[in-house]
Image 1 (cartoon, rainbow, N blue to C red):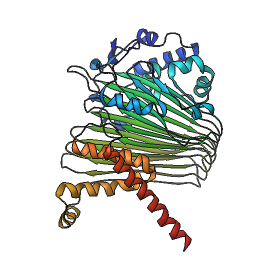
Image 2: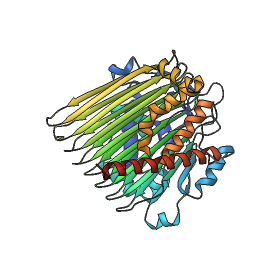
Image 3: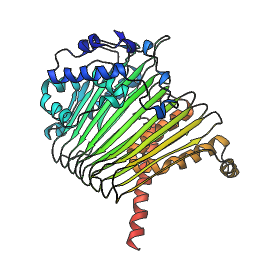
Image 4: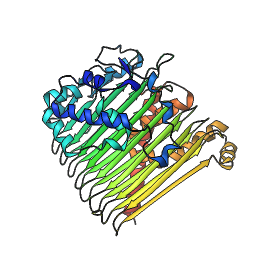
Amino acid sequence: MTTLSGVNQSHVDAVSKGEPAWLLQARKDALAKYLELPAEVSPLYSKYSDANRIKPESVHLATAPAKHTIAGDLAKRLEELEKETGILQVGSEAGRVFVKDDVAKKGVIVADIRQALSKYADLVKAHVDENPLDFGEDRYLALETAAFQSGVFVYVPRNVVLDDPIRLITSLADDGTSLVSRNILVAEEGTKATVVQELYAPGAGSGTQQGYFELIETSVKPNAHLEAVTLQAMGADTVCVSNRKAFVERDGKMSWYSGLFGSLLSRYRTDSVMKGAGSSAEDIEIVFGAGNQSFDVTSNLIHNGQHSRGRVQVKSVLKDTSKSLFKGMIKIGKDGKGTESYLSGHAILLDKGAKSDSIPGLEILTNEVRATHSASVAQMDEGQIFYLMTRGLSREGAKREIVSGFLEPLSRKMGPTIRAWVNYLIENKWQGNALMLRTDEAMEQILEVEKSRYRETQDIFEKHYKYR
């Protein structure tokens, strides 16, 4: 076992035994960058960063996979997963994989990353070679490439349409160790699939800080549509650092949907690279902070293909002394004519101690494009609270209705089932309950409401256009 501050070539060698030479070289190159880069690469953002909340000397990493106990609510999630397609990972141990028969017959692959490197090495290498990473972009991107201990490989063959989502459930181990993970998702031409990721952490003991460091790489081939949903519900004393990369080809579409609720520090960076003509990407993120939590969200839209489309919308709700930082950039290359792109970050502060900053930007190297950005930070309107209280709501109930209305435009884009999961976690966060999805009575009620609301919305628009 080693600490994050002690990651070196010996540790990387220990966690990469038996891997192919090309991957060992990539790990070595990434490690060199990790050791030389600061926690925040950009001097523009360094004064806003809370990366110092990560205590490298207190973050412990296991060298070899180990068995871990699955109990309580996580055991219930495992029972539910056995009826679906997905994988459960606890710490660095090999994942427990479940693939429904009809999904397996279509050639869909869901595998632990170590198994994938053994059985599907050519598929993994093809993705890595086609979409190389720049390890100098971010220190933790370099760490995740160099020292990953676990991960998931998902491959959806050409023209396969999956009606049900693939579930990726990851929990940190109960022994206080942290995890570095690399996940690769590939959607071949003409496919349509949804991958739902759930992140949990039981909490570390005194003197130890648990951390989850992940790299997610997605390859979206021509005319494919991939949705990646993240529900981050880790313990409030953990740190969660995620680098997410999407490479989208001609007429492909990548949709990121995220609900960020847990962790002392959540540091998410999403880069959507639109490589082909007509490609598109959207990143919809909901942040709900309380206590002393800090959320550092970066989303970049990189347009290299003609007539590509990009959209980022991040909304933060902050209580107590929590804080959020939204950073984003629209980059339109010389070949990006006809591009349309939009970037926005908005926050609502529920208490005087809460804080939010937004830093959107544009970098345009061609003409005949449309690119806009917006940002706002505001405290809750006392007039709105008073009005709702005159209609019979308590002050706390009035706040919750205002928050619901603030988030509704984003949650509506996610579809009824994902909306239900997000609302369930928001309700538990507001009440101070444990953050974990459960198929209980409260969930069933929320899901039924969201499905009904979705049908009503469809009917309204159908009637509107019918008689227009």
